[in-house]
Image 1 (cartoon, rainbow, N blue to C red):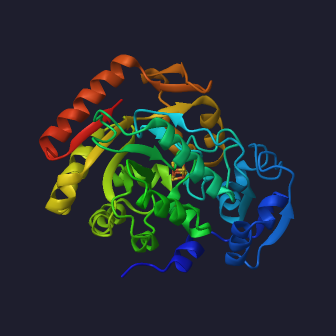
Image 2 (cartoon, rainbow, N blue to C red):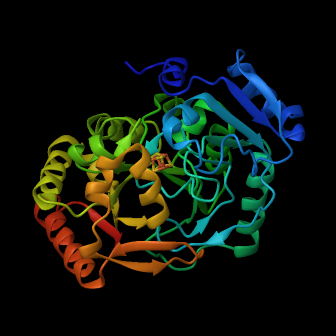
Image 3 (cartoon, rainbow, N blue to C red):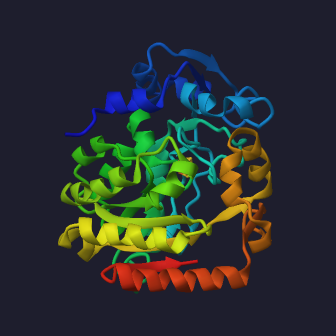
Length: 360
Ligand code: SF4
């Protein structure tokens, strides 16, 4: 039996304050969010981008998880640009939310607002979905299969948040899943570290791909704070498939630390032993080695220094400026090349049924 959405909401969220742009507050979606948290105080703000009490790291490090659990932000998504991707998905859809109530130590999602960034719900998700439909109409059908999908254009919905948690807060995610249900030639996709069984009732009819994000439980215990356990995520794969989702696996981030190969081998064995033949037949995975960030490293030292014992390994890492200008740190090219090759071997031996969509 699943946990009711209200119980899940209470486990993760204890919303005391909703910070809202006036237009978002007045919208139907804004009012719906307010109704879910009737005890929260409402504070109007000019922009979801600038809330000094929430964003930035100064003063928030010590209250890290409380900032995430006790605050919600309502705003409007201004930029409705669909961006090309080519890895996790063909395209990145404009976000319907950003920020997260969970607290993975390596998470890049909150960087632009400050690291203890709680969920911002965008109330104009209908504009987002219309932008996707316009983009699809301009793009036309997918002519050639690629690693993202053989038939459909895949739009990532959750680049800046976790859609399974967002669905506890508003109907934006259910509405997006409904939109893609009837959008011929396109598929929605999101990676998640949270099992929200209310999504099982949404009848996606193959129009949405859920990518359950997995790592060895020992890593997750240290790094994936506030998320569902790895067993719970694996246990949800067949249920989501039966409910009409396509279900892929997202091995991310792969953290290179003592014993990583044997732990990942055990996880792959567990998948081979647990997933149904139907789940294995449609599954594919993506393998993404850790990218870290010096600023995040410094902040983490203030609230979760043990994570940095495994995330920050200067002897094996090098600097890399990302496409969006972030000064990131990633494993050295030679270290990474060997690790990716080794990971591919582990999949070939321990889960030979599992197609690798990409690894980097
Ligand atoms: S679940 Fe995803 S978005 Fe949320 S903190 Fe973890 S990595 Fe970030």
